[in-house]
Image (cartoon, rainbow, N blue to C red; front, side, top):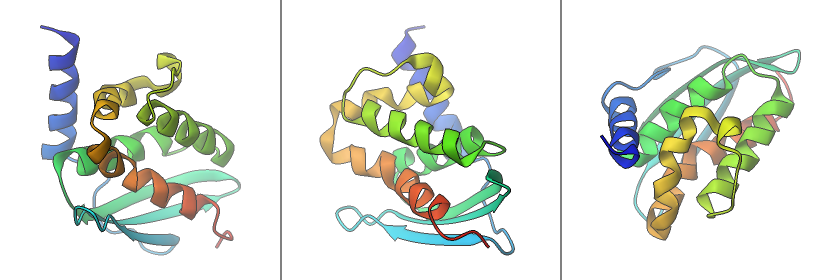
Length: 140
C-alpha cells in the first residue's frame, strides 16, 4: 500500500465516521460557510483556563471539509490555546505547500495532498478558520 492510499483511507474514515460531531451546550459558537462551494460548519468550543476542554462540529460539505473538521477536533481537544494556534498556523502553512514538520501535524499530514488542488484548500481550512475565530473570542 502506498502512502497516498493510506492517507485517502484516513480521510475517508473521518468523513464516514466523524469524530466529535454533534451539539455542545454552552461555550463559543462559530458558524462559517464557504461561498464558493457551499460547505458549512458550525463549531462549538469550551475553553477554560486556556485549554480547549471540548470541541464539537456540525456541518455539511464535501469529504475533505468534513474529514478535516473531524481530524481537527481530535487534534485540538484538551490542548492549550497557544498550542492550538501553533497547530492552526502549521496546518495552514501545509495547505499553502510550505514545508512543515510532519511530527508537528501528526495524522493531519494525511490532508497534505489537498495542497495540490487550490480549489479544495478552502474546503480543508474551513473548520480551521472557525477554530481560529473561536479561540480568539472572549472567553465565556
